[in-house]
Image (tube, one colour):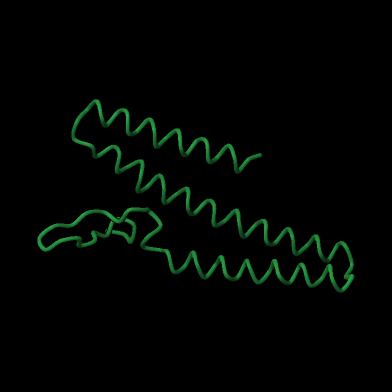
Length: 115
């Protein structure tokens, strides 16, 4: 069982999957986002200090790549947890509806990332 499939105790004798696929990796995501936040502050400082435009663009590219990596990780977590969770719905009609909704969410998110 990987970190996205770990059960979480809610009441004595009951467990359920965490509410979000990234929950098991939340600390890692927060560390990455804090690092990205620092990079963005560094870019602002570079602009404030009138640094060379290509050097600034290089840093913007690095931040963009880091954000894309976070986005891809979150998308993988969504598919592995939310879409797969929808597929576990016992009622066939509700399952089909839940899968369609989660896949549409993923497709819409991918569309936003590609714009």
